[in-house]
Image 1: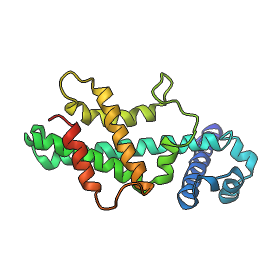
Image 2: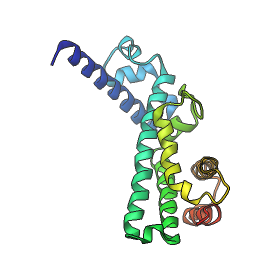
Image 3: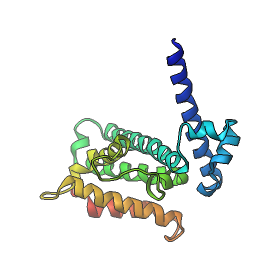
Length: 204
């Protein structure tokens, strides 16, 4: 390994450490606790070293958001594929099979938001300097939307643009996730809400 390759690997490892530490601190104490000073202390690097990787908290928040988007996309695809496998050959194209995939997708999304509140905030609530729904939207964010679209395009309904339907379904999931977390919805009805969302919006 050349000196240049070693330096590049060390730099990538430092960046991963910074992002992982910011994420850990945010999940433990909230994003207000994430400061460049505290991060530098935790990772045992100087603040100038940290600033050589990220210009500030905003960029770190954006990096956490991109990491979260990649993880969410993987979980959504995994849930849909698992539901399809459970339905069996042929059955996956049936009404119940398609509805099962959409239900699994919705559950996976809500589970992710519940398990990773600080990451979810970085993705959708905080300013990480990332563009959404634009030409310069980062690939990880585009892929997160694509992971929803891949399953939801089958249930958009005749004459409905699949991307637009996916936006509405996603907005519904986001609303459920944020209202549930804020304690604005009664406890215990999560599964019924998913059923209503899928049965009323998804055209199978």
